[in-house]
Length: 393
Image (cartoon, rainbow, N blue to C red; front, side):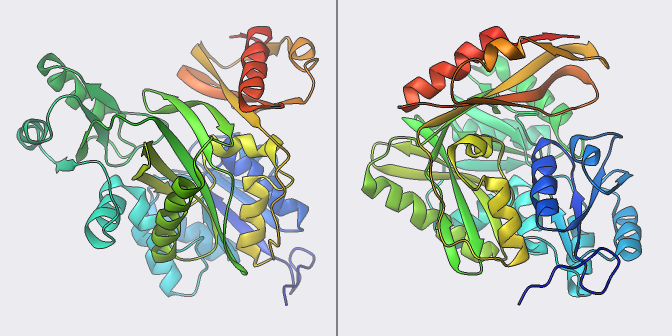
């Protein structure tokens, strides 16, 4: 039986977030609602989750010594990675010493870079993926592009939100794509993956929850990306029942191997009745922010319940919904939003402003949410909201 008591008492529970962005912020709030003491860690001060957490630390999560020092000091009941770029070797060691890494240290290790998860899915589990090659040097890269063919997609093996990703459409773009990948990797320059271009009908995120009662699937989330970065998502993505079943079988197969408890964002391409695995994140997914308006329990609330070992007997879906990211371009430490009154005058809508302290280049700063009688209506609502929101930097 789970017991959650007062912090610093024998029954108190403590969670440490490695990553404190907008997704981590929502996880922190949901854990606090259940009485958990939350510590937020990120590489910069005043990150979104730090603004609501009980305590915070600032350091690079690629610094294994600092992670160990902090965890040995705080002794959290749950270590919850919320970003890809983490010193996973340290997490594996800590887990062996008895610490609880969510969902597991191995899952974090395998999904931290695209090579680990792609080889697991395609080569060990036999799940259909796009054709791919890995390359560590420029010569290997040129050879990989030749073998895969043009057009193809190039990504650093460790990155997120589209950083370092590009599409090679002609031979003239090969050199540029190599440079983009080297500059956009989370851990700096290094190995890349070259993927065959998949001509899909649509792509989905199948949010999959491993919890004390088994595995549950949310309504499929459709999404639109620009340069690999999420721009818009909607739920449910219309799919044939038999296609949904195929997607669920893939998601269950790979999340079972990864193990542990929590929510997983399983990304897949769909072409006709064919389902092709792309990637998986062992944590809440950015496209899943739509669940903050589409369901009684958002992906963040589900993650918190699963982590704590609490039951998830049902997931009530409220109806067709959509989300749209507010991406700000420029350089500023003083971001001002206006037009909120006009945007929220549209029925069944909501806004989450993340509270990120600055923007340099382009950065996702908020998300618009809406429900409608259909996916089309919900998507139109967030488009209308976007026209009313103004951001000054």
